[in-house]
Image (cartoon, rainbow over all chains, first blue to last red; front, side, top):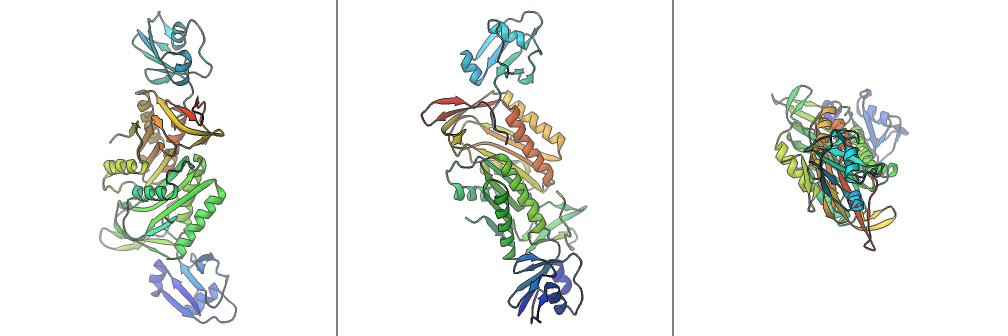
Length: 76
Length: 76
Length: 147
Length: 147
């Protein structure tokens, strides 16, 4: 399984915080997003982390990975 | 009277901390130094303050002024 | 004491800094320069009065990302150590949000590292601010100020 | 509380900063950024072990000159207030020599003003350091490091 997490305004907009999907062959982060969101594209400014490190939408995700999607950060 | 003060290594080298001289007509800070130090020149890197504000050696000093001479500062 | 602290409750930034410095350095005289930045919640943003704020973060990644920034600062400048503290949860105006600090033998490295930490934190640490305005409406902050 | 403090005894820089900030700002949320520098006495300089230091100053001119630096910083950057503390007299390694701090709405002004204060202090404030070495010999420090 792949764990998908959403944060902040993205979590609120999607109305979900976390879900799990079955990996379908060789998947990218974008594939994981689309698989979990009816094939729609993520927002243009979405940030991606795989296993809590920044990654790009075309980075590979594998079974057991945690993939997170979130808007631009605003800490500090 | 003009009060002359010396600080730090200059104070130690000269063996004096403070003295008073009679103003002799129109005097500069350099004149005051020479008057108090047997006509010798001050060190090249000497700093000058008149009434506790930085000044140049050719700035005018008047009766009642406090003129200070000291080496480059090393605080902080 | 850890180099990265995520706090859910209000703290006095100066007490926390003193505590870290004492724990980390004791009476050691190896550092000569310390540079510190603290960010405090203002009651005003983008023309509106802000009553309170909620700071969301990504537990686990936050700590890892802040530690990466410290490691990077140490590799770029001659700093002995760094410290970052960040509030999360409910925050009121005048409370401290963030501290970044760097200890070095010389002041340039301390200033550069401290500034790097806060700039990079704002750019890359997974925190998100949601403001509560005077009429109790809420809004997500969408971007950080340039400085 | 004064913006310029000359101290003859050791102090905890973080307690002093907290005290100033509390006295000056209370619970006001007008500042969002604070930048602080502290300089600490090291036990090493120019290749030699330093056991202690005596800091001489020019009473009266020192306070006036530091106040001029604060006034200048406030005119150059959008800072709300600044604070400078400096030790004089006998100082031991690991004791704090100097604090410069600036409070502003935004971080760039706070950093710039804080840095300006310490650089200009080293350049123009009438303090002089005399070091006592391991063999109890003494020497005047003749110039400040570039940073």
